[in-house]
Image (cartoon, rainbow, N blue to C red; front, side):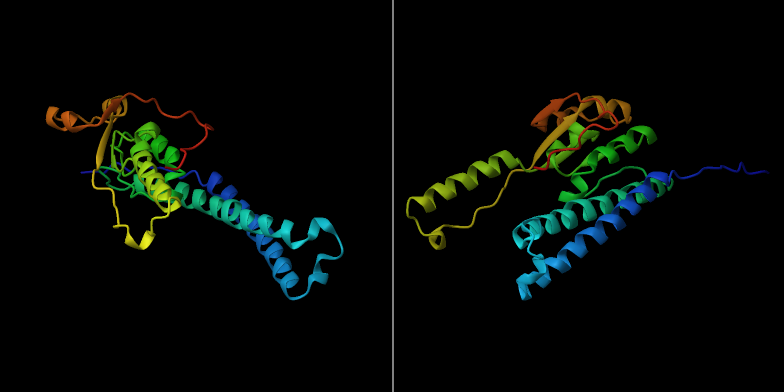
Length: 213
């Protein structure tokens, strides 16, 4: 009895580009950081040039390291690991909510669409980027609660006397179009508990990623 041999290859070209960008911005960001650190010890290291002053180098340093260096590293990791994960015997995808992961959720959504795997999200806006359903807190409501606390502090109330507050309601959002494409059928009682049911199409390639909640 012969076994059929499946041949496949990974598209690591985009991974290599992100890795090179990570290395480039890592060198740039850290070199700028070294110069900024030297200026703290000796201001003469601004070389009498206003464009090289600490006040201008420090934002460049933090943005280059946080966004350019770290951001490219995140995308390299997502594109590298996601291809290999989907090649295994995976029944469903459920990425845990994290700011860095959420920022690239549209890439995960496109991969789920291509592979036909059910994708669930752990932040509500995940349904806009390919998830068939998502559970999470309403961050808009969280912002309102925070604003009310700020007003109370501004009016003179002591923060130490305020009780600690937390979000106690987990909402369910459903993307009916994604569920249909991914072969997911939700029971009526589940749909009845959904706070929102909508139909979102996959984000086009090159479209901006999700805005973090």
